[in-house]
Length: 87
Figure 1 (cartoon, one colour):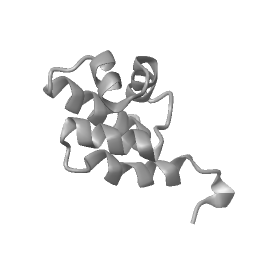
Figure 2 (cartoon, helix red, strand yellow):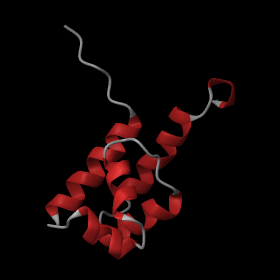
Figure 3 (cartoon, one colour):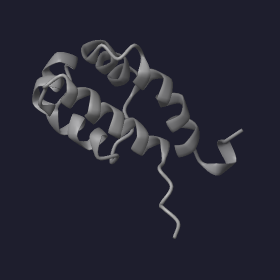
């Protein structure tokens, strides 16, 4: 039996959710700290929206993640680019 493959967007979403919950923050509290909407935080956490570099940098800082999300984001960008644009 094969497991579905985890996309890099799913990885980023899961790590954002994990970091936020470990720090005891709600989506709305994180949103206020990074100056984005709670609905955007929620959409990123379920993998429905790819976050911008600014979003990721602010989240990394607010969550004191050591730049983890910023290191994952370039992988998401490559994976979600059209096939003709990928290296």
